[in-house]
Image 1 (spheres, rainbow, N blue to C red):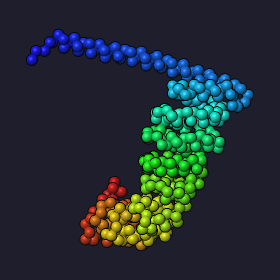
Image 2: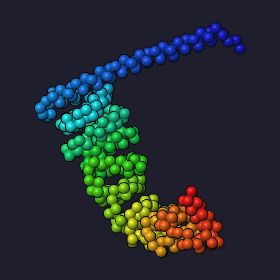
Image 3: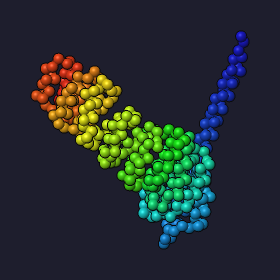
Image 4: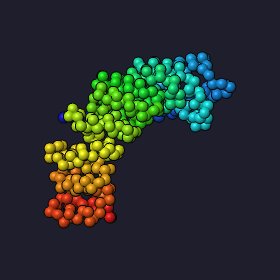
Length: 361
């Protein structure tokens, strides 16, 4: 097979030239766009400064129309956001007042961006999540629109919309958003949900109660997230959770989450249930005994120590490991564990020896 070497070399040179030309054009465009972005930033800063110079920052119709017209373009929205960020540093109170007085623009933009692509919607929601916090009492209209953003296929758009809703601090908006997502079978990571709810800019205990009242409307993923959120906010749900823990109809994952709750918040009626998780572990999933062994660190008593010592003989490594950790945290000394060290159960003995060695190192 004959190969024209000269043609191959010329083709390669032409390709290299095209790549070089592309890089030159790209660098030139980037520098130009950077200058344009800086000019847009300064322009918005000056426009907002003009509003600051007024005696009262009230809703200026001309300024409102300017915002509604220009901020429909994403590059203008980005520059406006950057200008607000800088002004919040240099003149926080005045900027805060300015943002609170431009609620109509937020409502208008939220409606208009609803039909734009996911990336643009995500950025607007992200921007609103930073600023709605300044006047959450009157931002319910924005929240109602942002609820529809949670149906977007992009996780970034959904998460930013949820964060904006949290910043408003309206319990009903949060519930409506999650009901809509649940109804449309939209999966949202449980960790994101639980951590995101902690950003709620309102009465978190009230939100906890509302989520629990609507608990069984949601799928398992959301239920787990709600329990984890409640665990980080309030210890007043021990009674309510205990009924669910004892019910045969409660999903195992939910029971696991509730046991973790009782590890943080001691609840004496749950003590017997935790004991039984270890005593009858052969009849249960080993996860129950492992979690119960951890939770019992918060239930000091002679019976707890006895049950934890029996857990050291478990066939499951995690149960033995958690039991030994709990015994250490309960301050059980060497004398009380003499029967373990001198016993015939090698696994129990080695686990405690290992924990003591780590503790003393």
